[in-house]
Image (cartoon, rainbow, N blue to C red; front, side, top):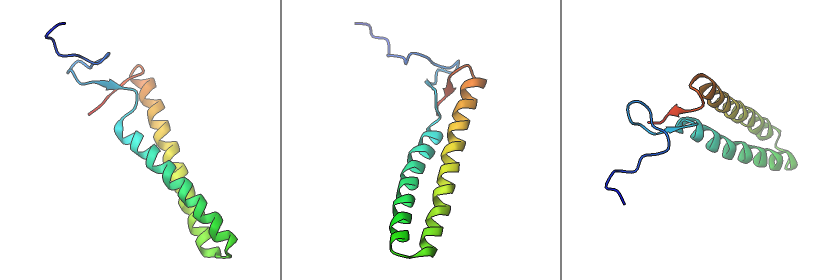
Length: 90
């Protein structure tokens, strides 16, 4: 055993750990997917119950969530291309 602190596999020049996705993008994808599923479920129930206005509102929210998820995935892919596969976390 060595007394050296354990380092992650890859670190930046400043010593920060490097990960393929930024925490912000991960949060956008996870919360967005939850919002998308919830909006679709509520929208289907509202449609079955004949509440047209709620169905339209949930459809708009589902579209917004899907666009947000797509933008977060796009940012991740751009970061991978521009920074050689890894981005700096923190």
